[in-house]
Length: 486
Image (cartoon, rainbow, N blue to C red):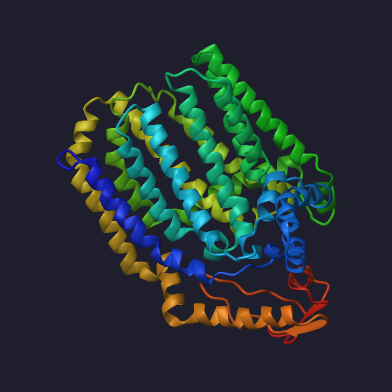
């Protein structure tokens, strides 16, 4: 990086990133609503189908809030998530379900870039291009290796609940960092807007809301001893509002109704299993691609932290805290469900795992650089070797595991093979039949799920929740699986 402008590297990475996600974005136009997408918007769609006047649009504005209140008392307390669920774009007058992928990929991309450029600029006072480089390296790996393609990119309800809320909280944390480490005064408007954003984050999934509150508490402790009084007061308000939001979500009457049908764990057991599962993810996700990205990232991190005023004095404490935050998000599902969560939630863990890896690398490398002043020069000389070693690992990964190990390749295979088009044809046939019949509707399911898109999972039992949701959504009396072969 001594002879190559970081902006040049940034442009190359950005171009590669854009090309790598092209198949992901194309597949968005083949995705269709599934499962909870129906139940969250069934009433609104039925109302809009029956009415065509200005009242329709007024109901469309009020409905998300009314739906959230209803779910608060009957199912779960995640108040802001329920508002977003009710805005499912496939149910709009002009259906736009393809927006799901653009919202998820866009929000995760923006939040990671905004977060890492904030870290570079406000914490390390260095060229923001290094923050861009780190963010893009992480994003390339994340989108290509996130474990569950469909629930991570193409299912609105699931991806909004986890990936989007992770992006929202990362954006909030970056704004907090900018507020605390900026030379400008903290205005009342800025403080209140951040508090409101924290309240919205607390209205999402419990894993993310819990970790967000924990980060704000740690930030408050830091501000109490090392920052000005007005900054301490500002973060105190933001933290208090976030905790109030989480408490409002936790005490919802609907939570106890839902919990009655689940087998949860005691809090100590949930924490124990969360720690075990967090450790096991290292075995799942540490592979050649992960090590390759870290090796390539080392020179950029060295440039970013070498002139920083951050002392990096406590590496063990920092690593323990980072791992603790990473594991903490897994405790709520173990507490409520005795499991680490569904596929969409594990996708969020994977994004968080990349944050853990990058954060650990930065702190450890920063600690070495502060103790060995000549290390940045050595790293600069070793840059070709480190980048070359990273590229070699990628090549070895190709040879051992093949190109088909990447999500964009799997998605491209669905597109080229015609499976995506077949999926859409079958989906249309099934849903058009439901929409055209008022009574009992017998239908088959999608013949096969692809790498990218999943089946409807209609059941032979018309009282199954998937069946009832689709019946309400498409306006027939009952939906029954015609063929028992699923």
